[in-house]
Length: 265
Image (cartoon, rainbow, N blue to C red; front, side, top):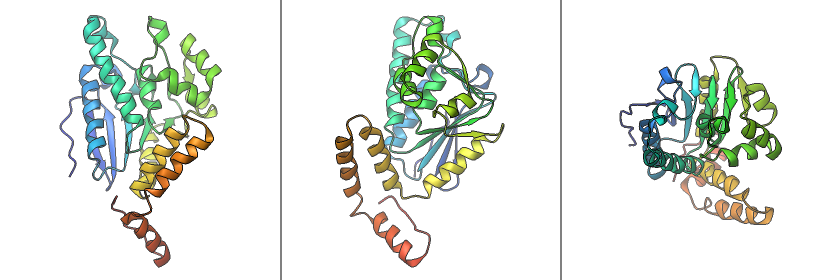
């Protein structure tokens, strides 16, 4: 059975049978991402990719009053270009790994969600946010630019012109605006976002895990090309499910008017 090591900067908690709650745990620095958190996030994603086992959905949040303020700039103030590059390369792989993770991720955004924190949220499959959450892609203000898919995922979420304005001017925006623009799926009353996200994760986890994985893959890769090519990817994913135990169990449970017992096989 999949077990998580005792991470230093991440808290992992099994919720119910199939949901994993991951909490970035550096609240004294607004969950800023240092090398340790970067390495531990990469390790977690690798474990889930190679053997998700009981995990069918992950909820990502932050401890304290922030989701994450982004990279730890106090550390980077004295970091060599070599060390900065090494850390960033690990973060790059993690960004792509979360997007391509076979397990769906839900960001439960509480408080500040800036720079790399926003990029992490955007690599999740969807976002729930406290009404008082604050977002910003602040990198251009300090002489760098988004480097963990921010210039790709934010335009896809809010549109090219709005994303250019937000990134090029490093302008913060509210959860209400993020919801109106389609970046955030649901606004939650303060203090309830994790509970709401866990409830959503349970709804995902109750579905057939192989179906969820194939549908996620079809949506993500299908949107990278034209409609016809996307449809071919959808059909390829569809037919992989026909000769599975879960497909047979789902149909049988429907006809027998009972809850299905999916096993991911």
